Length: 401
Image 1: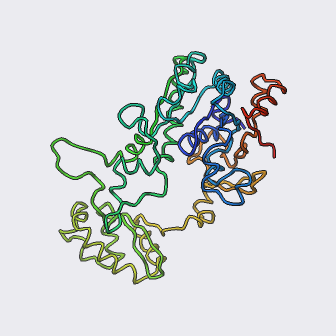
Image 2 (image 1 turned 45 degrees about the vertical axis):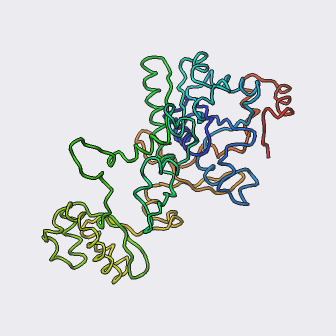
Image 3 (image 1 turned 60 degrees about the vertical axis):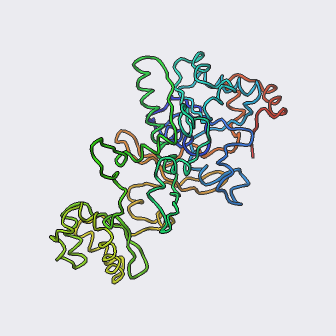
């Protein structure tokens, strides 16, 4: 089966989430992705792992973020290692790197150096805070950027302690933005014949994720959207100890909720008849709802809410998603057999294309560390004796278990 990006060569020299996730979206669509790892390997191989997975230098996130890739393990601190990376980039379409701004020059991996030998190269640089400004050289992780971007100010315990979001939303949304920016650059290259540099950052991504909330208007003194708590977009516990989430935005939804909760006398109450007034009186409504929802089981409320067309859902445990009828019907999760690990189920790309068969499995499992080192070096023209010399001197690493 021909995939949309078949024939595109990507060199992924990034670690953890943002870069590898962006590269995997390209790999899923047919791009030939070579993952360059250090001798020790991508840091994600060693985090959130289990005793079972440790024996293969694997973790659950790594298995998902690095499917459909080949791995070469090398030491870029050596002249030979730098040369190998440069050679790979000479014939690549895309190069993805996440280093603190300025560090790449120490390894001769800056845009200017690589662009000289390959003026068609799409060079993607990922940083924590952006390439300019006082924070440019600082290390950045998702939770740090949740704090920097104001996201943590919206989610606090009653005592005021900020609560980080466990989903790395800057990283994970950044994966999609990265692949989108690469496709824009590839499309522009079709017209101009020239590559270019793309800069992405966790900070910018954290701001972008608040696009509908971070709106300032010169003569408007109102608070930013989303700052005030809303009883109409919240979760409530039911009689069976399960929680349900509801969202009520429109007037017809408010009327429907009042019918479900048997409080129809509030439909036209001026304190609640408009969305703005419902937000203003959120505390009173929340107290009312917290008294009503525990009187019935969650299934009862879900049936009633769905009948009225009110957006709602049981707060589902993540382990239940494999058995979710909606997930199964739309093939949102695929299961592959990894030659070492066994069955692996993971989320596939969040879209389908009518001109292509549904991607229901990975073409390649997530690689062992350096699994394709010899293969990649031979493709570059290195002989067996040279490769063995690299291995003996720990310039490259190979896992052939």
